[in-house]
Image (tube, rainbow, N blue to C red; front, side, top):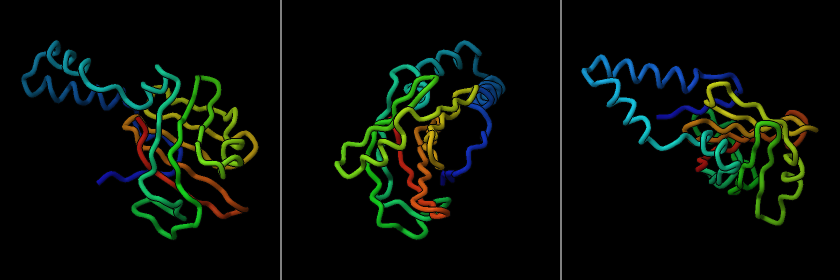
Length: 161
């Protein structure tokens, strides 16, 4: 079971995980060259795809935002969770949502601040004029934390490719 954390602290970098995997593989008798070749054939992380292409497409795992999604949806809200495209450069980001009734959410994340993990384990978009964030992890998991009113937080999660 994958546990998704809603906070923005790093959970160990992709580089550290890769190094640990290489040590295990070499310890199991595989050559370093074989391990490096296999790693080169692996699919790039969602964050690496975002760096390379500037955008990833994201699909929500649940139809509605929830009060809390640490383990499962606690307190479904009436706010729909919709597919979106996350766009980012090293200096700015945005989300594009096709639904007509989401102009306020699009405007909230227009020219969002972007925080990149040094190991590209995650990237976080934060609105410039409000609280909340969109956090994309290297494995493709995303979390959206959105505040609809003072102290009324809702969350959504899903996958990006």
